[in-house]
Image 1 (cartoon, rainbow, N blue to C red):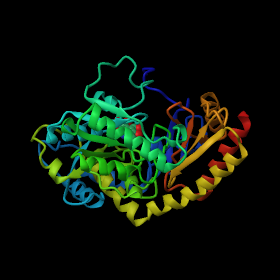
Image 2: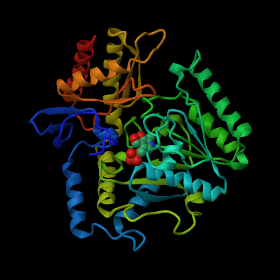
Image 3: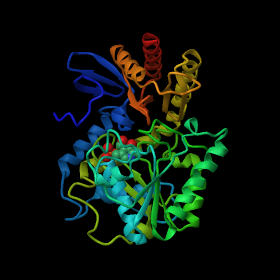
Length: 417
Ligand SMILES: Cc1ncc(COP(=O)(O)O)c(C=O)c1O
């Protein structure tokens, strides 16, 4: 294996079942990673297995450029109905999150006939070159891969914990003020196609923006005739307690990029957006051999059905309250936790050496993750400074396993201090 592909946990996983993972040595782990926020319905969900097998027996590849097929067209119309963007919508499918984001940005450029994209520092949009250009973290993602596609300008995200502000309102004012300055002075609305934003920065460390940030950003884009693209690849599909995280903030974006949980781990991603945009994309200019694969799309339809039937957004909210209470207890107990934050069950702790200076405690973060693994819990790291532990349990996890995982996290922190 190329060392370019990193592995956080030195274990070999041979089997998964809902919130549990089993390794080759017969050890069992509670999975608080969900394959980086993907298996929202847990591992090997029996109904998803059934949906995949049923579709495998009918048709597993044709390529949408040859002819259409029911799972693709049904998923396009289901998502166009379900994604809460106003007006008529269209959809297009791809294989990965990076591809969805790239295609959203490509469509924004082509339809607006404007070249620039604004993205955010600390944002992560994927590893292909255009997605990488929009990603706002240099190491380790960009090292040696330049030149990247040009005409992407990055602005600060409202990471209020690390900005010189005294309130959320001040944080929004500061950041939106800078975005406006970049949009109107460093660039111009005449050349800016879109602003792309994560409603909560995922890889950035589960940074929840102030309540009014996205609506202020939306106002700015509407006023200047610039598209607003929301990257819901990590936040979507109920993880934050709403189907789409942007629903918490009452905005009406022009396009959303979906991936990860959309087919619970089969490779599929999507862009859903206004008909005025997706309907004007030049024929043949987007797509790909595998995009919207029949098996992945059939599973994605079943995912939507189960999410609704089992009220999984509600459940994420409920589980999230339990997690938040525990993380608050941990913050009171351990002075290395600078902040805990999140929405729904998408929650994290930021580790610091000193509560006043907020110096990132990244070695400690690695040690806690290792200690947790030794005790049977798989955790994930994140953050601008790799000092955030993010919790990504499946939404189908039992309360018992959730509590067990949280108590292992507690023990792991205690063990390293
Ligand atoms: C917000 C966001 N956008 C895009 C991506 C890229 O997705 P993929 O790894 O499927 O290309 C990720 C992956 O972590 C992500 O979190």
